[in-house]
Image (tube, rainbow, N blue to C red; front, top):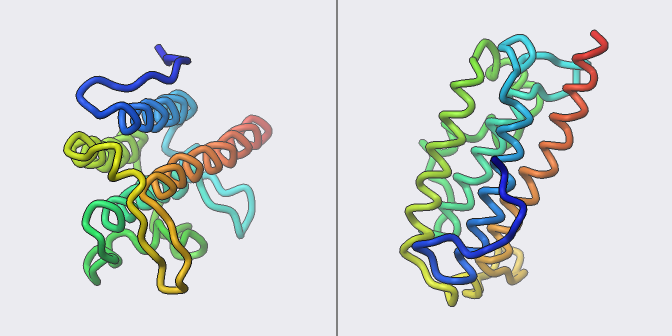
Amino acid sequence: MINYRIKAKENFTEKVGELVCMLEHSREVTLSEISNLSQSDLDYLPNDSSNSIGSLLSHIASIEFVHQVISFEKRDLTKDEYLKWGTALELGGKAREVFRNNSIDYYIEELSQVRENTLTFLKSLDDKWLFEENKWDNGISYNNYYLWFHVMEDEINHRGQIRTIKRLLENR
């Protein structure tokens, strides 16, 4: 059952625990949205330039992975990591070809594995870490809190796209 209260999760510092609560709520709603989808539903493309639900789910996992690397390890993706995650990050034509014929279990497992790593890292961090600042190559400052807000924001945004595709599925 989905919890509709923001409260610090146990085994985390207060603000990190609240962030985890929000990340987990967002994920629970996403999983609820996709729970009954078939493989053909996951592969459905409303038009030639759309992303499938499956590719959007892989994108959600890839964004979280990239933010793990940036915020936990303070680095960019390696060449091998980019080879694994780049298609999901960028979406588009190649993703339409690559993310096909996978079951819902495949995507749920991918999302779960990435999230498990996130939670392991976050358990070892304190609230001060959220406010640590860094700069992108263009000189713009950001903090870790923003990075993880963006992970949640991105998932919610793509869940909206998934809901739109699901409505189109009803009319096919």
